[in-house]
Amino acid sequence: MMSTLRKIHIGLGLALVTAFAFVLSSAPASAADTEVDDPSTGEVVDAIPGATYQCTMSSLTNPFGRDAAQLVVLPNGWHCARQRTGGPGFVGAPSCHQVARFVGCQLIN
Image (tube, rainbow, N blue to C red; front, side, top):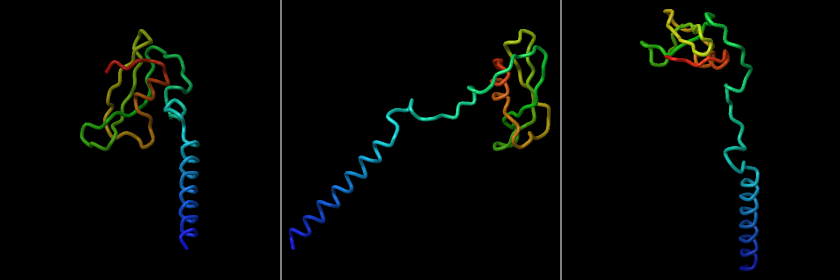
């Protein structure tokens, strides 16, 4: 009777260790091996001075909402500014930060 229980105990222990080793071997070795959704690695276009793009900003009145805004590329072409246009932002519209990364300019506000 004891030898049967011992065999079952050893078998379950080995199964647990094997399963644990399998899980560890399938996990990424470091954070560098994981895939990260980096929105800045997408297509970038040249910033056109004076161009405006529709975007959204954090709402001043609703902590969970978005306000409509526009992103303006400044005359030097490297910097851009965002300003609220009034009203709620459209659902699914990109944030001004996303648009700035896409356009290739740096937000100054």
